[in-house]
Image (cartoon, rainbow, N blue to C red; front, side, top):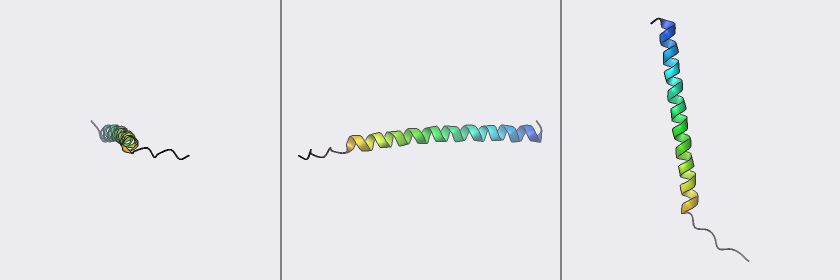
Length: 47
């Protein structure tokens, strides 16, 4: 394995890690948004 191959595989690994991290963070953000809205009481209707 030469320098170019090792750099390419490193970049591919890093790209995969970044994609996984982004996916996980989006999932966490969705859960947080869902939890925030579900846990808040609804204000009484104003007439």
